[in-house]
Length: 493
Image (cartoon, rainbow, N blue to C red; front, side, top):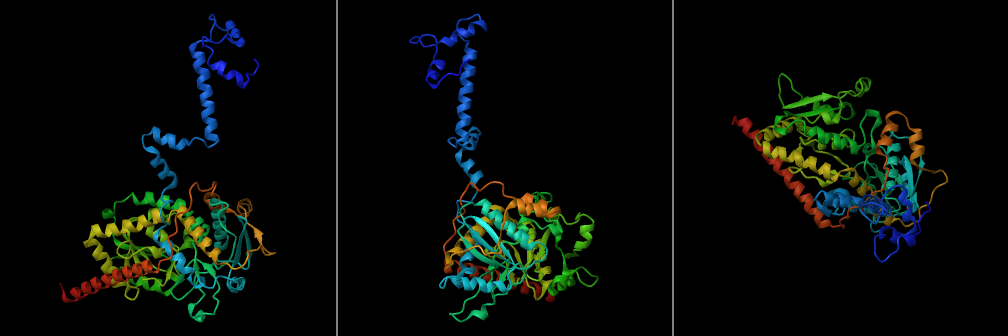
């Protein structure tokens, strides 16, 4: 049968019209049927096939949104489809994004020169250069474990998530724990602090805070990429209702990294003291030999209260502890990462006095067990903040806005140094082995985001001042309650 031209399509589907002569091909049906005309079923078949062909073609061309049609068929409307695809991405960014402006504040007036960037090379592990949407790295020294590799991998995934949207930039990254750019060294207005990126900072430093490597997996201790961990912990939270959980404060970790953690172990149960705590030493060497069977994060949401305490600096464990909907007993910190600055005492966690750990923990547990509804609500709000505001899409949004705002301050044109190499997924996964390879494959962004980044709120010192005041008032309130509790205990009430 010869292929029909476009001018015959009308004749094919309107052959029954009394104003038209039967087309020539119509006679070929006679050997298949005793009728002179194609049957109604035959006509319906061709009509359905043609419409289906057009429908699939329009979807491929993007002229029809199949997802919206699906949700309409389900009776849930376009808004449901949009909320599924976009989530909260069109909304204003979460509270902790406001601190991006503060972190970049030291260079707001002067801008960032190439000399300033080169000044950060002294302690940096590597330089990152993004030019025309491609990522280059110049490595200076090795980091602890694979922190450097997975930080580079994370930046590469950001570029894949938002292709073509990141401006050209150049920065230095330090993968060690503690901040090194001391603000007291740059009190002179004419001084030029080096812009140095790292995982945490403190109130005495100018280091720029960036999401840590473990968001893409921590192969050395078998912690999966954050997107997967968050899903696992969400399921783990459902296993035991809050009021059915063990009514003590739980901690498991390495006490040898800092004296403060060794001091915490003094709060464990003894024949002389019961501080309402259950504290355990984590032996990672033993765990690795036993296949990490006792270190699944989703299996550790079984206590009403979980303790967070820093190590040598801020601790990666923070997000895993707070993602459980147990009430977090947050030991007064010295350091901060990028997201904790959006969270408040008595709303998202319970503050613990680091100078009197044991009495403070005891009071926190007693308060929680005597105010179960409030304690449960604090745990849920803390967990909710992480599950909603620290999902991987918003981690990428934080990285995007931080790098975008940083690039606006550059007073030079970024360029690829001779010793730099271009990053690409194939080369990086090809060089990795074991869990490192698996976690790279698991955290690979296979397609770009179909939404724009959330809207970064403008720099507003008044809003941050009000936030600080609210935080301070909550800390003072807990101090008052704790003081009253122990005074009553001494009086025998």
